[in-house]
View 1: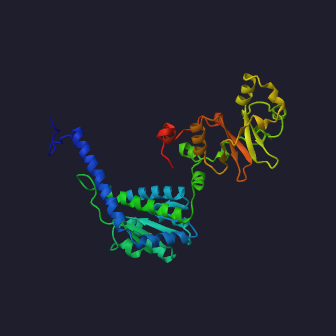
View 2: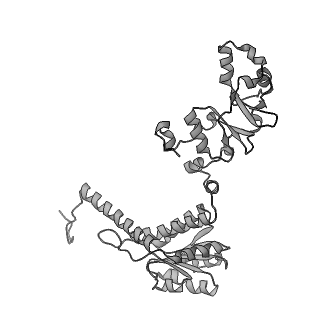
View 3: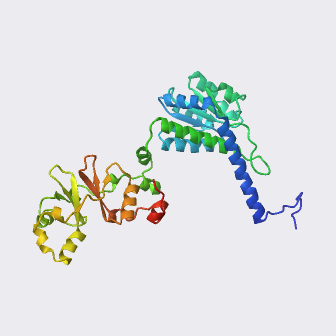
Length: 350
């Protein structure tokens, strides 16, 4: 029985109807994003140039849902090489405007362009000649008219039966913010290595680690001359404690010529070739072993170790000289990507 005072019964949606409505909401947002993309014009490029020339920080401000979108945009900007921070407009007029420098640029987000809290900042920013980039629905509102540059996202009907909760409009704001962040990143020459430095933790950080972060070096690296005997190489390269199971063999110039592993030594004894112990190690070493550049990222090393079923992978510099070695026991806990987990025959070709 419905409760007293209820004006109408609420008919619950069955699972099929829920899915239909959910899919329509996502389609509505996708359509809004397409329209926003189509209406971008030269003012977007003006905004990029303004931020590029900025000697300070990009200050993002907005209130309500637009403010929350602004905080996400700040996170994306920061992780892709653009110094930025979020300024809450209410806190700004209570002292936080003191954190804004004259060489900063402000990115103000408001769908209507009439958010009172944001508009209160404009006279102060104008007095200090701080440029303002507006992200708003059209060019005819107060914020747009006061801004140095205006990026119009267009008027979008919000998704859902009520059409009231910010959905399509906030999706458009976020997409424009992502586009700004990534275009700025590209313009600044932001690299995968730069991205890795911004993301040192978690699964993403591990995927972006350099081989130099995990390779063995110094006393843990066993390097010997390829023209020395097997016996002398083994004696010279004795190491206390844990050691890698491979010796890297170089020529007189220090360039890598081959690799000799514990498995190679075992095979000599299994094949009753003990006489080889006093012959040059170059005769029994693996010539032209698989290597990886010291500039490479860890996922590349994991791919090689996995695809070729290797236990050790020499790391070489630009001159082909060994600078380290990746031992599979050091990276055994590193997660493989979905691509690396596929059989070699099923992997995409470059």
